[in-house]
Image (cartoon, rainbow, N blue to C red; front, side, top):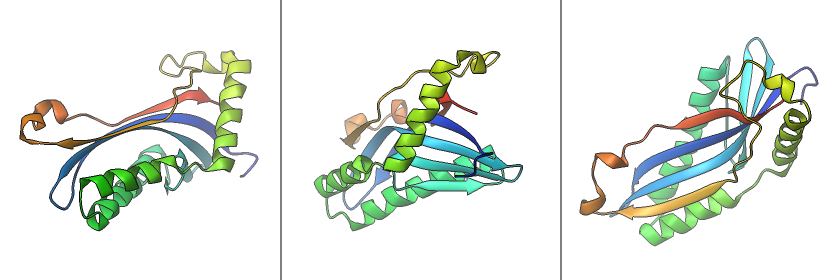
Length: 164
């Protein structure tokens, strides 16, 4: 990683409804990602957990969109290949459990850095030096659970941990 890059630890929450072969599932994931700004025109999000996803672009908006699209592509591929809900759930759990160890180490360093230097957060009321462990919930939706409460926005929180 470029030593001049700005690195931030992120906590993200993606609630998605995925349609598979004879089932509809809700996947609620809270994960960790590493946000790296490598210059004026190069911004990346690298998965920590799940670790098998990344996305980049010229700025924050492009990088987060590419990250989400690549994440959804994995879920869509799993849904296509799964013959039933149980197979889908098992494959999503396996995807989620993949941890990118180098990114996890960098994420932890960024969190530690901001905890040691809390003044970095001055003026950033939405940034907190907190760690929320990754978690996953996959549930099958049936007619009774299909209602507007299923709708939910994604959340990418600049960093429950941050570092320069």
